Structure formats: C-alpha cells, structure tokens
Image (cartoon, rainbow, N blue to C red):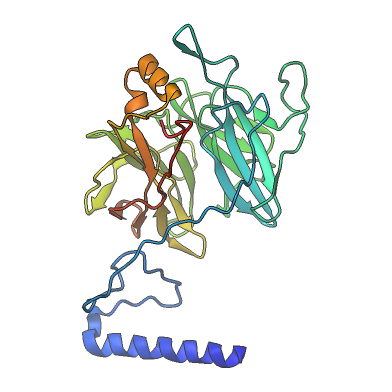
Amino acid sequence: MEHLTTCLCVISGLLIAFSLTAAHGADAVDIGSRLELFVDDYLIDEMGDGAELTLHRPTERGVAIEHNEPWEGNASLFHTIFRDDDLYRMYYRGAQYEIVNNALTQPHAQLVCYAESDDGITWRKPKLGLIEFNGSKDNNIIWAGDGGHNFVPFKDENPACKPGEKYKAIGLQAGGLHAFKSADGIRWSLMSEEPVITKGAFDSQNLAFWDSVRGEYRDYHRGFRNGRDILTCTSQDFLHWTEPQWLNYSPDRTTELYTNQITPYYRAPHIFLGFPTRYIPGREPMTEIGHRLAAVTRRLGTDYTDGGFMVSRDAQTFTVWQEAFLRPGPEPMGRWV
C-alpha cells in the first residue's frame, strides 16, 4: 500500500505538470526537482470561487524549558534554535530587569546562555564551567562580554568554512554588529575587533546565515524607515559586507517589524521564511507592572506585539501575510509590554 500511494502521488504530479504546460506553454513554472511550498501565489495562476490560501497557526504544547536560574533572570530573550546533526542547540540571553526607586536597573551584565536537546522538545542546560557567575562556574553561560544583549549564532554550511569557524554569530558591540566564531558552538571569540556592519539600529535580534543557493553570507537586521523595519546585506567572508538595503514588501507591511526571524526553509533553501515580531504602538497593558513600566519608560508600556509570517524567493522582496501567525492570549502578568 505504501508503494502504491507513492506511485499515485507521482502520477498525480505528472498530470498536474502536463496540464500547466499545455495550458500556459512557455509561461509554465519549471520547478525541476525542487520541493515547493504554497506559501505565496508564485505557483498559482488562478483560484476558483471559494479557494484561498489559509495561514495556519502554531498550537501550544506545554513548557519546553524554564528560565529559572538567577543568571537567566526575568528577561531571557532572543532565542536562537537550530538543528546540528543529531543535536538541537538553543542560545538565548540571560538578563534581569528590576525597578528601583522608579528607575529601570540591571543587577548583572547580560549573558549568553546555552541549552541542548535530542528531540527539540525536552531540553537540558549543561554545566559548562566556562563563565563565573556569583563565584561559581556551575552554569550554562557561554559568553559574558559585549554582545550578550543579542548574540545570534548559526552553523556555517559554507563548504570553504575553516574548521575553527564552523559556528559563527553576530552580536551588538560598540559601533555596530561584530562577528564571532567558534569551533564547537560553545567556546566563542571575536573574528575582528572592529564592527562588520555599522548601518542600522541593532538593539534587536539581528541574524546572519550561509545562503547555499546564492553562495554568500546574508544578514538581516533592524533599521528605522517609517518605524521599525528590516535591512539586509551580503558578504563573501563574513567580515566585509555590502551596503545594507531595505527589504521590499508585497503587499506593503501594515505594522512596524521589530525582529525578523528569517531563515532558509531547510528542505527548500531557495525559499526564505520570516517570522517577524509585528510591533504595534499604543496599547496600554491593564496591569500594575505594565503601568509602572510605562511610567519609567514613558512609551514602552503602551506597546503591543504579535508574531507575523512572510516569505521570499529572492531574499529581498517578501510576501507579507496581513494577519498574525502567533497571536497572544490573555497576559495577566503583562508579559507583552
């Protein structure tokens, strides 16, 4: 039965290809052996009455990891997760925010923490013995210097990558985004004392990766153009980058975009999927902590975010879905401020 099902799928695919070619001739889209996704209208000539593309939404399946260590704090943000052979790696910020005498303070520096998983569901925090916190190295901290605010790593799939640079990252230091390298994904060092990207607004989750289709490194980071928006640039060596360019949108974005979460789809890397945070100013959280934060920051406490979805086939122009992909529910503790 399994073999029969496979054969029917192949025959169906051939019939569809034949029909498109017969109807449109040279205008037919040749996808070769690529896997394609119906995440935009690229493969759609027309849709009959009642047909539409529907954006599905993630379903919560419980807590995967708790950030309950003192060095992780109450502001563990900017998580990066990727699969590395048989292991899933997670990197995130450890930070603590406190309000003291109506002033927002941080009792310790922002840190980079690490967790790993065999299945992407159950996570462990290895005690790495690398960075001292409150007199002990019995923790999962991998970086404590500048860059800890938004340290975003990836595994470099560039065939010409040097063994000692198999993992790379970008993070905010003085002057812009700096480049980091690692041989094992755990022990990190700077690739250059100078920032590699300087045009943008970098106090957000900026990212980079190896684009296997175009044979170049690509970055996506934040800037301001009619509010928060996204810039992109490329590099051949991860140290020298082109002038950043603004993304194009179709249809145009209707919200500010705070982060971008853009990544090549792993089974079809010519398609880039983005999961940006949609930033919407002006919503007042009805909580005590929300009002206190609003009083301290004057503006931050009135803002609202949800998660969006967008897709690109050329790395520059993105089809933007006009509805939320990840929708926040009731937040009695004011976490969405």
